[in-house]
Image (cartoon, rainbow, N blue to C red; front, side):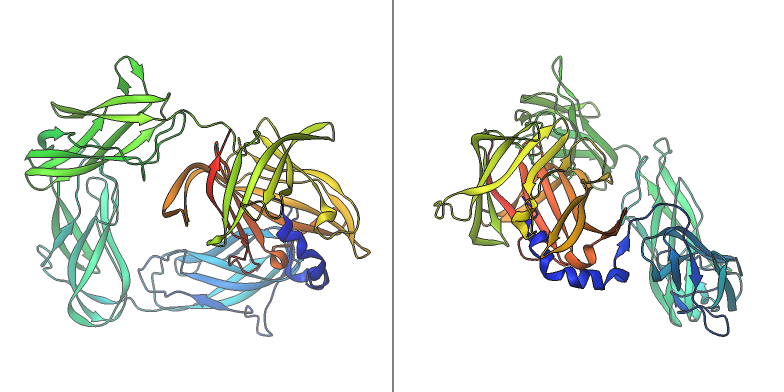
Length: 561
């Protein structure tokens, strides 16, 4: 678990790091930044990069309609860079400059152009400004097939029922006749809480098929029945209907229903993996909502299954119900499926609760890891009975061997302790290439904070071949209590670990007292995956360019005592 792969590189690349100060980033305060926009002799922004296409009447998409400018930053801190509003649209960006010198900033577009032509925008930052030009093209023109009556042809895809949230399967296929090529924007009115729309570029031609994507949510109290939508394209319009289904009817059958996934007391179910399939003999087509109870007799068990959709035909059909909630206790529970006046039951076995520990340190607990997906390259880690007393704390001793036959013998892997929600390691940095013995403690994990939380270690000072260095580690919760699937030689189909905390760790160096440089651009970074009740299940070292480096570690098996 120790950060050896990071520090081993340190001595070899420190000269490069100091030479590349301009390319690394300062972690400064949120005070306003200072600097100037770069421009040429005519006042045009440098560079003046315009991304995306711009057409009359077509709303800008912030992800693709952008402009890029360059700023010479003289003081790090927060910034807001924006343009004036021209022809119904503008560009804006906010953020934090952490690097002095040249920085490229992307401003995202908002609004809708109402006329074609070349628009000149004034970009402003601090006391500087520069100009950038954006060309708005005439929008594509044409008519909807079937206009002014019913859209023809028309195909409505997906199911529609009260309470349904529109997704990728909910769409409508229509045809258009394009007389003027270009960007087009087609939309419907909003009916029953949903609407359909399309944005894209089309060449001239007749009877071109397009797909209108549905958006929004149908209210749960919406009256079932046929809903009429009007499609609008320029001055052209046509109509189509989508049916919001009424309630279906039938009889549920739980015969052979076997819940998928793992079920553990005090561990929340994952709707993606905790499912059960049941059969329904549909007698009346229409919308359905099928759910189970959340109690087994008088004892609450805290979890349930449900599913909704639309039956489009009668007869026996299989549907999948997804799991929700958190089992309150271990045991075998009988859940009752309810559908109209029909019911059936199926059992779910819940395992005892996981140890509430994301890095167990109990004596004889052990873990085997596969290195870089090589089944013949493994690491065995175990906890021995002995402990270490240091800094007025008691640490459990971890040992490791790169050979399960214990040849060579086990060597010390690290010293660890836990204090409430915080997990600490005690370590001598000199073992990783520094000149002087430097025993320190740092927190590598905390399990009671939200994703996005970060913290830094104490500041450490040492030398490398006589050169002073001041550094620290910065950790952040990348994700909190998520499922993670690992594929190893003994689990080729993948094993799902629930309740995993992912920690991202970076190395920082101080060149100026009180200011730390994020050294990711030199050393890369590492992600650690900790599963509740199990411990470290995965390690991913990344290169400075963001690609995986050697030393990836996947848990192959474990025993927690």
